[in-house]
Image (cartoon, rainbow, N blue to C red):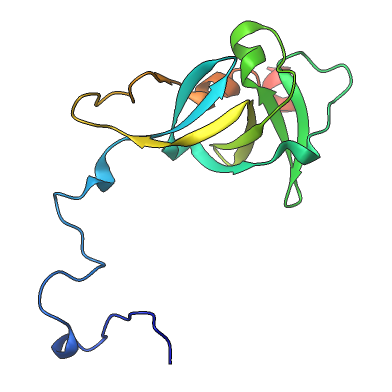
Length: 156
């Protein structure tokens, strides 16, 4: 017999009070949240809506002749993803050792963003509703999208 709890499908069997699947207005689910990462000693907050997942950089391969901002390409479950280096995007100097790759969603296309470390997910608080304390909010998709163009876009 399983110890997992189940929600009765018959309403007459449902316990009184709030079911676990119900949401209330006092839930914090609607507060903005950011994935906090570090690059070049700076903490950045990427809106969680932009983040698809975080992967290890073990399969990251440099592309000969690519600009300094491009850390390389990585195979993520059969999809080849271009990974840009956040440190190089911000300072012009490539990170020595990539710690993690944050996969961002740009339309139907994933983009990789190489960071030194991934810290945690932080939500807005009454004291800092626009960003977590000590963290600079980064629109990572907009930053990366400026540097990625399809062959059709380059031809225009």
